[in-house]
Image (cartoon, rainbow over all chains, first blue to last red; front, side, top):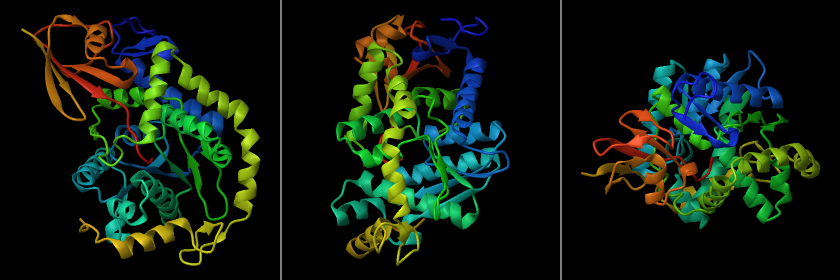
Length: 308
Length: 68
């Protein structure tokens, strides 16, 4: 295969664009896709302070690198989940990238700072670990941004993530989640803006970006995610994509352009009805927010792993 | 001679009779090309690249799951 731009030997093919690229033009392709996503959805304004949620995986490390190359003021936020060796290893990848980029990495540790970890929370609440993990991340990313004075949180959700979440939401016709699924969640009282600048890149592209930039990332999958529903949706979508390239992009961007607005009104009503959590002050529809309830259940039920 | 192929999640090595193209290798291992990158030596390669018996090949999964 030849590079679509310069006809040199290609190193990556992107079938949904019916294209292949050499190293330099692939890296430029990634920057262009992120730039297009940011511009199309008004994600970031020049001069804003951006906090990138960094897990040590390919997507968040690529995102941090890309935002800095595009000229944004981006620091990292790492959340220690307490998932044994997996978390120990991911911490090192996040710290190494902070050193390589010469940027600040804000670190929050669930066990040290909040008295629980994800395995303990999953056991105590009898919920799937990914549920406790997602709830903790949503709450703490926002809280850290507010505490440290960042304007916006950027997450590494890519096209495959968005397609898989959309498929799950549609299969359950979860209209509340459909109303909130968008590349940008605007700021509101108690919430900073949340953006997904990788929404135009598939995870094969973000992995290739890291390999070509020599960014070391955690390849091993989270041991608590094995066999979860989200991975099953991705497998189904990749089967469709292999037969018909462009399916995932059409699914996600068709929804964003023509479907999202039909569900968004309900979520505006939900946000208007929020009031401060009686424990932490975060906006919540009830008296105590879901994060504080999780924390209380988890901290009282299980001995947490030692903070590092 | 056979191509030594490193697979991940879990990490393991398999021998595959070569030479062959990347597309043939993925077909032989029943892997979806959308779900992996193929690295020969230190370099990414496309589906039409030819793999020789002496090459060190890594097939790296790109799918990540869990809460984001």
